[in-house]
Amino acid sequence: MNAASRVFAAQVMEPRKHAPLLILISAPSGAGKTTLCEGLLKARPEMSRAITCTTRPPRPGEKDGVDYHFFSAAEFLKRLQAGNFLEHATVYGNSYGILKSELLMKLRQGRDVLLNIDVQGAATIRERAESEPELKHALVTVFLTPDSAKVLEQRLRRRAADARSVIQKRLSLARQEVSQWRHFDYLLLSGTKTEDLHRMLEIIAAEKMRTSRSVAPGF
Image (tube, rainbow, N blue to C red):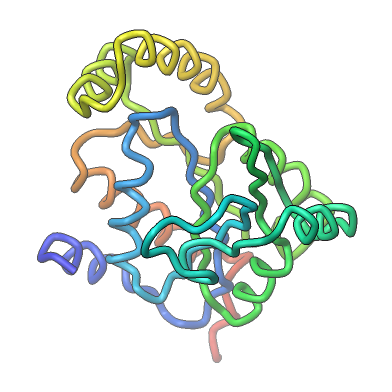
């Protein structure tokens, strides 16, 4: 943990007697979602990352149960038909999904859970949580985005990872995704990495102090 993260973590230390949170963060491509999630996990090492299931083969260095849960296509389909997934999607011929049982297990252990997911997946999880009281009670949704398409385009160009045509496609998709911001609990307008982390920690601290998630004082 770097010095800034230690300071922010100390600022938002909360009493232990609070219900755990399911923190869902969505953002358009290039907004800084992955960086924010990595910073959050370093600042709050007690937080657990939701591990995605996939049918794609492991890449060099990836470990089952750490980076992903690696399933065969048959096993994934079996679990899908059994209704085990809270959310799932197919991308470039491979299936991906979030197991409801994994989220509930971690929440029941008293651990906060971080879920990094796209806007479409977030909508599915919000809908499914309506019929799952434990998930609904724990769920906090955050939409991260720069304050303009111009800033997002600048970030995408600085990454130097995509061709101009790909960047334009990403920007077009981003406009559609940003239009969904009102469906989230929080809108986090992205600034610097440090600012984004600080604001995210403040959101978590505020949610921890909700009376609906607190244990009665011992008077």
